[in-house]
Figure 1 (cartoon, rainbow, N blue to C red):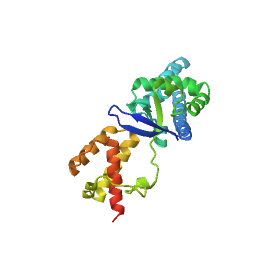
Figure 2: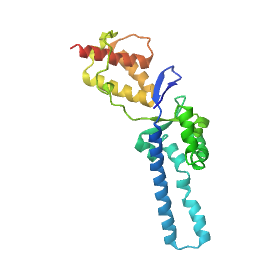
Figure 3: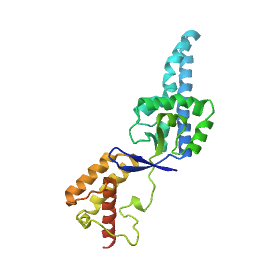
Figure 4: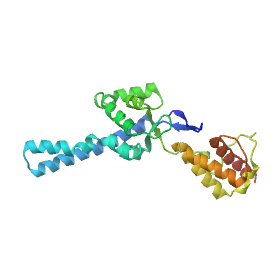
Length: 238
């Protein structure tokens, strides 16, 4: 998985991980099975009605719209996800950090004809591998990509941070926090950084400064990370 950076309007840099190609293909498989199941049930239902072919065709066109508009509808109303994407924990986002609008999802959906339908996914796979940032043709046109929201289990997912031997703490005031409080701060920080919610990080930074009376001009994302590392340092010294 490649990483890319989002620079927000508040000059906060947020790292994101593009979704693995395998995860995107599995998500597509799940969504395709759902569409196929819906289509089969729809046909069975129409045949059971025993109506004339002309009326059946018109009714088929009407009730097949949910399957036809599956991707654009679900990504619009599920905040960049379909059922398959939800299962695989991936999501469509804008490269500039903003939330995609309907126009972005619509462009991706229209160009799916080139990316997936006409080329059985060949163009999409080739573009993602060559382009980088997890973008197929539809993503390039819409200014979007697909990120992974899976948590990577490492030492950073515990309360402690993996610190270098020569690490020097900067804010001894962090010792006023309890383990449970710092764990909450860390969980909010990690989730906000992973999902690009920079407003949460700014709020965390402000609250920490208010509680500890720390005056710092550090970037909020760096400040909160430093607070967590300093707390980890002092905890390891006990």
